[in-house]
Amino acid sequence: MPMIKLKNWARTALCTSKEIHYPTNQEDIISLVKSCNENSTPLKVVGAKHSYNDIFCAGKDGINISLKEFNAIMEVDEENHTVKMEAGIRIPRLIKLLKPHNLSLKNLGTNVFDSIAGACSTGYHGSGIEYGIFTSDVLEFEVITPLGEKKVIKNSDDAFNIYAVGLGMLGIITHVTLQCEPFYKLEVIEKKMRFEEIEAQFDSLLAENDHFKFIWIPHTKEFMVWLGNRTDKSESSFFKKWMTYGFTGVMLNNFLHELLLFGASFKRSLVPSINRFMSRLLLPKEGEVVQSVYASHWAFFLPHVLKQDVVEYAFKIEETFEVFRELIDMVEITGIYVDTPIEVRFVKKDDFWLSPTQGEDVCFIGTKIHFPLRRQPEYIRYFTEVDKILLRHSGRPHWGKQFRITTEDFKKNYKKWDDFWEYVDKEDPKGLFSNAFSKRLRG
Image (tube, rainbow, N blue to C red; front, side, top):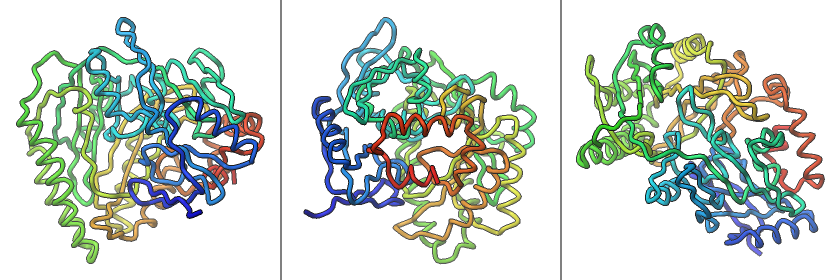
């Protein structure tokens, strides 16, 4: 029988497995888990494949299971603003199905194409200091354990802190009950600010806005602040939305940028000039304030077409500007060419054992390198330098992104690290959901 080959969206992970299953009901999932357990066959869920690492890989002796056909809404409580769904549903479909019920998701990142199960398992997040990672809004999980038993985990249960960011190690999430909120619009404000201004006004920017983040264009002095606040104002016109997402977002920021970076893949010293050109093209003019009003999911969304690789770390929010200065200095001193903005976001703390936001409010810093027209510049040196800086500040990586750190680093930065893996071994003694990714984590 030929092997199944799976690539993630960014083509940064290529995996093989014996077969892939597409169940349409919970009974089929239970049956498959029991069969794999009896035969000691590794089993891994593959979601929307938006992770940049091999977290979803089952291995040549294993089986993959995709929940993409398991994607219905089960119950909607309009009065309490909750929805129960099959966990294979992807965020765009969920947004569409919530709309007739006048409901919205509380917070989203710039990528809105993840599956719900994947978002919960890897610590998906947006930005806003009063908003936690995606799982913070989960009221209840239904999980098929490695023994093929159905388990219900409520957010009031002690075990919820273990399952909230489970990395796919504790079973298969089949149903999720999520706390939503009534449909809302966001007024988005984009403006340039100097780095020193952002630092001086940081506390008010953080406290006085529902959602706040900022970006830096490497090899320039250009910083842009993005603010999002709930509003009753009328939505911006369809033409403005098309210009923002279709023309500027896709045509310029993706296709034109890709062509320019393709040229720079042969001569990397062109990157600073391209960055300056694109920032003049895309960022607000000096002193200009760009205001827009969109449905919340459109306001959060940023079109991603260019293939890329990504690192992202969370660390203590108090160290935001110290870390960022180190990143700026590193780019300047090493002479490494960085072709995309570095994004900075802020997330509320939680008590989840393997959450990057466990125990403290955090700053997330994310950076990436693009692969234009399948050209791949050397970038591992850059990512390794980012790793070094963030490790000095007890950084915790986003589980769906790339990282090159050791088990000892994880043990130092996650106080429940050993407890989590002891729980995994107790729940999954045969290592049904273990794979190369989890083995590297454990050393």
